[in-house]
Length: 74
Image 1 (spheres, rainbow, N blue to C red):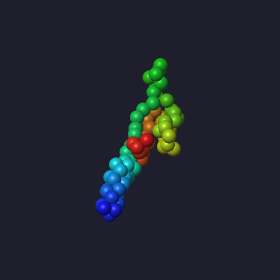
Image 2: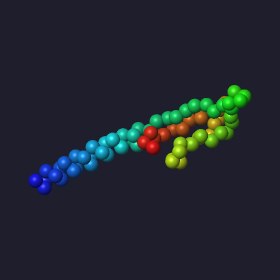
Image 3: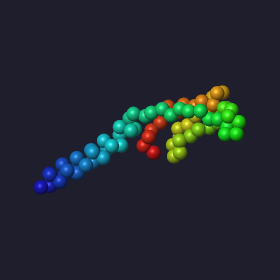
Image 4: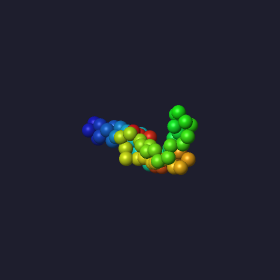
């Protein structure tokens, strides 16, 4: 009986890790443009960050930005 309980616990531990790990292993990319609301001009050098992480980027001359290796498990 004890062996059965240990096997069940190991199964649930593995299953819970399987839900978390793929998101960490397969990061994605976030990209977009930052423009001024009042004068539809691109904002140069604007900082874009993902809350609760150290990931971020600054917008380019045309207002575009790319954040690579962004994790969706926030």
